[in-house]
Each structure stands twice: as structure tokens, then as C-alpha cells.
Length: 181
Image (cartoon, rainbow, N blue to C red; front, top):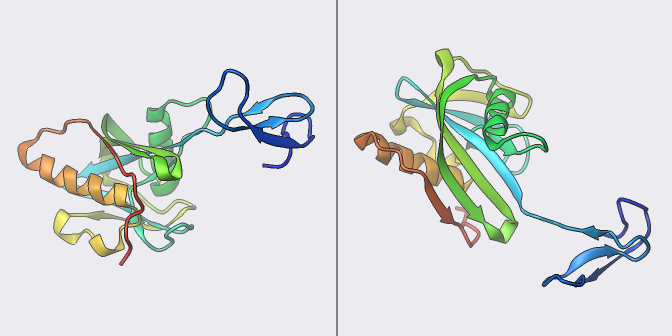
């Protein structure tokens, strides 16, 4: 960051009074520019034993499969963001939505939250950020073409939990970059 988004003057990297880490601070108006983690919200839509996945039309990982998810917007709840992203990416409506999975990913300053839900009527189609959408049984999941580690882990845990019918909320940390094949 080079310039203040409030007054346009230059910023300096320093530890503000009362803080414990460096922040960008405007050299003119004194405004402190906080940079905080981004929250990614999404759904794990289920229909008739199958999971809805989207093939990404954008980078990163264009052409790879993922759950419908994206960045939370200001002024919305995580649930609203997850269902909005599911509509935007898969033109899908969902119900019976329950928080299922949280991942802290500090090395890229992100938090992921996935909601387990039912896909209304099994209806879906590609949104502007998806090349295609498809429902998959576990045996048909394109495991080698899943875009992100958080998605792979969420899917594996879902199928394991489905055996017992118990779906606990899990929270974990991914503190390293996953090795790509």
C-alpha cells in the first residue's frame, strides 16, 4: 500500500500507539489501514445422495472443481453469503442449511466456512464464474481435479459423516501450502 484511501497522501508502515504489529498509517491524516483476514463462505449442496460441484471459470485454479463459495460481502451474514455464492456460481437454491466446516488458513489470511444443505429440486446451472456444474456421487468425484485442499477435506469428511448420519461442526487450521501434483 502506498497511498491513503481516505485522503490520498502517502502511508508509512509502523506500529501505531497501543497496537502490537505494523500497520499502514497515513502520514497526513493519521488514518490506520487495517488489513484483516478474508472470509470465504460456501455451501456443500446435497441432492439425492450427490454433491453439487462447480468447475471454475476463473483463476485461481481455472478448470478445477470446487464447492460453490466465495468472498463474504460487507453487510451480510455468513449464511447469506454462502447461499448468495451458491446462487451466483451454480444458479442453485438451497434449504436446511447448517454450518458444517470451518478452516483457518493463516498463511494466506483467509477463513473458510462451509454450510451443509439440501439442493432444492436438484436444479442447478453455470453462473458467470463456473464453466459447468454437476452432481456427483462419491465414487464419481474428480478427486485429482479438486481446486482447493479445503474442498477436498470437506468432501472427504462429509462422505465419512454420511455413513453415521452425524455431521459435527469441525474447525481446523491449514498452516502450510498444499503440495500440488
